[in-house]
Length: 303
Image (cartoon, rainbow, N blue to C red):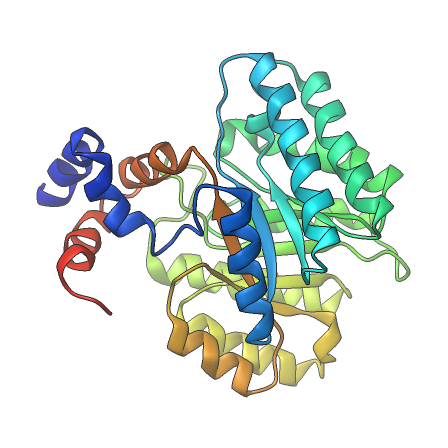
């Protein structure tokens, strides 16, 4: 009850107070902030994926502006020689308003990245978006087989079957490329696993499927048991280091991140930024009230 109460109240608190917490997990507000953060991680031996904050837009004019902002981001990042790629949320481009318009906007972004021989990751959002996002990914993959990937969520009961179904577009020359994460949205128990052990078991089951079938996984987790489980699967299947990577969120578990790097594994950091940081932060609180107590501690206790 305490967590839920705090999660409900925080959106009404002064933005400056919320920023005290948020700035540890968001690179900043401007493109300059994002580029600086990306370069800092590159210097420490990490790749990045850059994400402009914003989702669930209300008008298609917003979708067009978001497309143009991403194209500006890509041109700038490539000019700066940043070692990174890009993540996009389909609802930021109108997925829930007009799927064809959304596809055309994201296609333009993928085409821009492909012109630099780079890569776009299509994020997975909540369950009403799952099927349409997979369909969008299929269309992009057909035209840009080396320049796009997808996020999949281990807590969704359908995910393993989705992975199997998508194998029809996998080839050795252009393997499927996924970010495998647990998932953050609150979903009904009939479509999503709820218990920690079930979600973790499913995560490792899906990761093993990827290794067995030559799929490239981005192993996105801060959970030590999952990282240890991934190590075992990498050893079991003798997976070359260029065939997978670990991924973590900006500002989260830096010591654990360093331990993975020290073992010689590749690491990519998710670097979000933008003017929509307040909505992003408060929305995440509503989706996961358990974060509230951690935020209150973070306001007063570093580490």
